[in-house]
Length: 179
View (cartoon, rainbow, N blue to C red):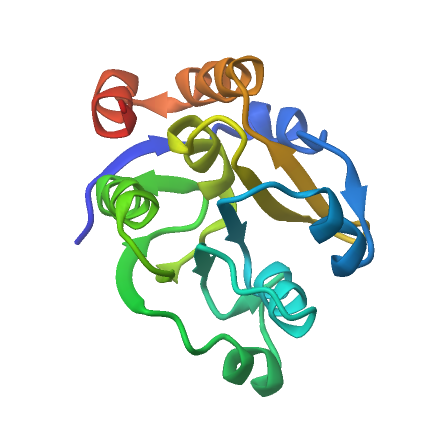
């Protein structure tokens, strides 16, 4: 079983409802504004980018959207990546395994899909912390669209602060995500 290094406390859930960037409803418009590399968090976001003709450099998927299984069409579309990594990550947590896979995927040449057994919802935070300046992290905002978070030091600090407020071992998280 994967070691949980952070757990989202109930009282923090409201803090994560605010998007970390502009929200888009059309993948083509988002892609026109995005900068590379692009990291996609979520099955539906990844599907929309792929159907718009763009394969993300890194995609994190769990086969679900809003805790329900995604349609077969979505699962089938998430294909053609150079590398696949499978990790465990229970809902509402971040595991050491997921964080290490994310760092590996960002550094690895070629495209990578990380298949999460559990849930990938919190992965945007460590993705922003570990991605290079100028990278785009795209994740879903339920019932609104796709958030485009362009990584810079200010956003990275904001995400580090959120990770630090979670229940867990922030020192361990920081050591894994450190560039």
